[in-house]
Image (cartoon, rainbow, N blue to C red; front, top):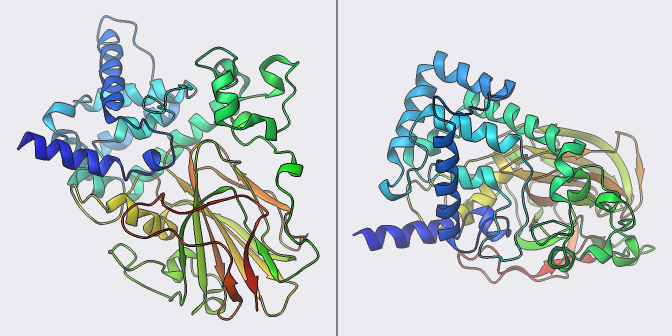
Length: 424
């Protein structure tokens, strides 16, 4: 029975977004090793040891747990429901101490993909997210809001010069020879003569600017050529999008009212959705797929650590979660009225997944765009992108869909500014 349980855990883990995107170790044993090291550190900080004080946001979560009996109940159940062999965090105090340790450090680099662990908070929550109580708790509004404050606190640290200590040329640094090739850093614009190659913080490195000679705009003078908004991997191409669906169920994918927060939905009913996801090595800025004018731009705060409603160890849960996340996660909404009347309105939907879930939009309503103009960026964390088109806008997509099945990373790679579709 233990072997079956471990097999299911492994299947479930392999469909976690961090695993698919390359932020979490390819070998789940590395997650367990990280947990054991975390446990040793927490034990060292036990009463009488050198205890690190909680950050203000972690103190806020502590107060929520103390004052909200429902949150306290589900948190206790979530900790207890972890598999016996993988229960590292055993108390609320240990969880708060672990969160404090994470938000005061920067993610490290490991040249071995089997050991790469650049999503430490996802690693912390790996087994908790798989529990019935965890699925409920990570959807709880107050708990989610408290987590968002912790993630913003972490983002502030990663925006600061103090986070640059991982930007080194040593073997475990993000500027090492191995990382140079993993991240294709020759495509970007580092100043290798400066300390930390000129990057002011970890996030400055993470959403580094690319040399656009490596991402030329496809057919810039052809308004019918629609280009990718981002680097990534194609997850899904869908047609006949509907106003509402049971987006949390297998086979029920895009719910426009939820995805677009109720905005301009009538313009997109019956249209198409092109969804992709970004890996750690991808360029993390995103650009306009069409010529046009920005008519609306906003960020919708949503969930961060939540899978689709496929409770327990359903090994397809995180695959279908990439549909679910378009409707419930923190995401940007940039509505662009195309200069081509046949294309009409397009919505660019950058989606934050796990960790920081930071979406920054740097265009204003009324801005005039050329295809390939920058719209914004992701700070540290997992991310996906959806482009939503109105009915009749697309004549054909010029990149293939993923091969299907339950493997979310079976789609073709795409690059920002490459052609993905031809308009009617």
